[in-house]
Length: 101
Image 1: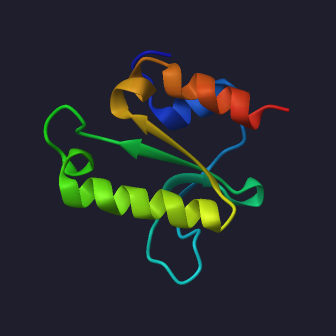
Image 2: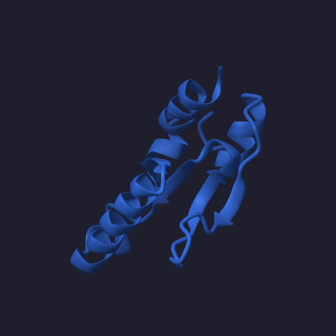
Image 3: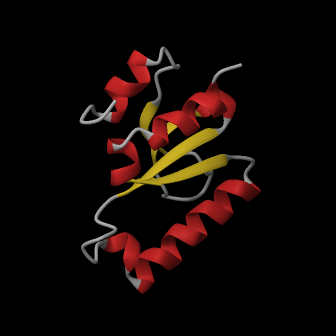
């Protein structure tokens, strides 16, 4: 699956199509990158992890922790992956295990 976008990988594996930019936590402005709301499953892709991006700086890490904790309290399963894990196929492997019956 190397080089394919995540949505293309999801379609190729015949997984349910996710919604994007989902507001899944009542009263919060957090958005999930990809979500399957009927199953309360979300996928967050942390980009720029090797280039001092938002997900590697203190305030960004703190906000990501808050988002995942609030999601768990609201009954969501949140899978966090890096861009590299999407590109090398590791992320789709986890999604297959999580989403297939």
